[in-house]
Amino acid sequence: MLPIRTSRPALAAVALAVSLTACSAQAASGPAGAQDPARAAAPAEVTVVDRVAGKPVTVTATGGTLTEVKVVDGEGGRLVGRTGAGGTRWASDRKAAPGTSYTVEVTSRAADGKESTSRSSFTTPEPGKVNKVTLAPGKNTTVGIGQPLSIVFDLPVTRKADVERQLKVTTSNGTEGSWGWVKDYSGRDRVDWRPREYWKPGTKVTLEADLDGTDSGGGWFVRDYRTGFTIGAAQVVKVDLDAHRLRLEREGRTVRTIPVSGGTPGGDKRSWRGTAVLMAKEGTINMNSETVGLGDAYDKDVDYSMRLTWSGMYAHAAPWNAAYFGRANRSSGCIGMSDADAAAFYSSVNVGDPFEITGRETKGVVAEGNGYGAWNLSWGAWKTKSALR
Image (cartoon, rainbow, N blue to C red):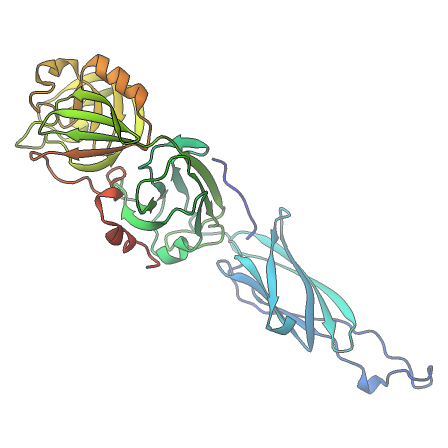
């Protein structure tokens, strides 16, 4: 996903008045009908009012109207805008960004109909801190019906409403959804866009994050972001830890049933319940108990690893636990299965597929920021997490 660079405005609100030179009036001895100099129309006075980073560039005209305004940054990017107030005021659609030089060219018409052009320039100061984002899912990917659109910010976002206003989600079928602010498991601010219900297969989703020139409160954004993805097959994984069974459903029909063993009851090794979303298919990875705070150490390479939470819950092959598949929960919190079942299951599921996990002996519901736990909130509760509610 390549960032899109757009134009930017300034951190010093200094009005720049540019008087336009009027054409010279003819002498009294000139041709009949010549305009008397005392009655000659004064030129329009053009003022660049707002030249501040984080605000639109604003231009006004006194004693005339604006006919054309061009605002261009040092890289040739143009700030498009529109004229209002009867042609006497122009404002850019986008905000000016920090650390950017702008040239302003204004053509105005005086009361006598004569046009004049003026040029001016200004530079906004460099930002003290620059905020960046991490987007999920990746651009041009195909994901499961439970995958949210997720944005994690490098620096704190204290002006959440200002940021959220710059985020536009478009879907190919008018899917209803909402942004919700959560605290990522890493401790960073995060905002996810979740549909009201699971996505419809085939839906195409695009994000336009016009953040360039926006102050997050913890730092400035100095570029825009774009991404897009497609929703794949309607697959849901249903895990019943009481019955020790996993069921893969596709289009509402069961296509595979697998005996599993979940987290050991009675302590920190219990599994999470609720809806988790398959975050990544990581293949063979090393798992070490010390990384998840478990006392009795294990350190082993694990095949067909499928991440469900940031806190370390996976579905994976666990041949060392074969005696318990379909019979008892005896893992360290993950959902284990045989090598053969794991291989087939791994090839069948997609990132973004929801895992609906039930069971009495669990340690709680997956939190919104621990992976993608937004589905564990009702639609009404999720909407309240928007900064624009």
